[in-house]
Length: 472
Image (tube, rainbow, N blue to C red; front, side, top):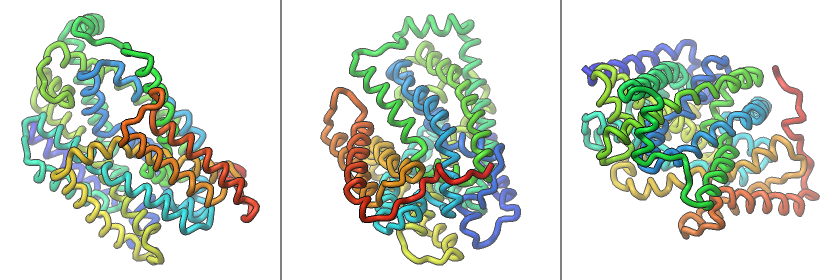
């Protein structure tokens, strides 16, 4: 029964993808990549949330708490809560820049604002390098979810099916299909988390009884040392700052029809944090009642299987699968857009959609192969992805607020930041337990400022996007 429900939901998602096509303009790359900048607050809300709360929410967050305690999850809660107010002020300005420059990818902003092909390539190259393991992360999460449910598909089969569905989503109508399907996904995901968490509370007699039992099994909101506190706090700060530099988040912002639409959507996004007490409950139940789970990432699914009938478990699995598939689809779309618009030069706009779809296929195939053949290497690279994305922050802030930042300064800062982040990560060097990405960002800002001051006399002052009149 659970398998039938699971398959039915995936088929329904494909039907929604077809229906989303609507009045899609054939060959229109703006319609394909950013939905023609036409999404209202309702659609934007669900699409943005879909990129925030992916399969890692339902797999990684409970698994981390199960394996390492509640303190492990505090960084996730902290950085999301801090990212929301930052995004409320930054994302409308990013949209303004995108509208002003007709940008459809994050590197488009740098190309148009600084009139620099070299900087465009630096930003595009940095994004592509760190997006390679991002797709693999979604494949890994899907495999974990399916295996926990007892499907036990060979990894090669699982990634082929997932990659094919993700491609179908975006081949039909570009970003519009993930936007519409995200509504279904979020309803399933939110309902699944609340149902599983509520069942966990009920099974053990209530909130107090569950938390007391979990505490007796070692659950505690505590840190082992001051170094752990430092690392957690600096990670929260860095990832909150880096969040709106993620290329797929930038693309989601571009889909909005106005700045006011973005602000309205941002106001309601923190409501999703209401799911986390229920995720913690499922983790605590697994800790108390299912202490011998071999893979901590199975904690949430194992709790669902233990407490719920099979048809409900099928809905839980479908929500988890759609979470990974949608992020994979949007990520693939972003890769296609960056490669077609920013890496390869002079592709006519009326041909960019076709070439983007070809690049998407190649990206998905590469991600599939790496998932199956080099999972350990890719998981290590995933730890560096946020470091790399975060180094774009000084450049974005320069576009929005600075007159004197130069292409040379911004490019030098990005390269320096990425080099420092990778060196610290692979050398396993810890500087006072501070997050390596934040240290790299400090060097990035320093180099950007110094080099820009040294080269600004030779370039024309630029107009910051924050000073341009807004569209309500």
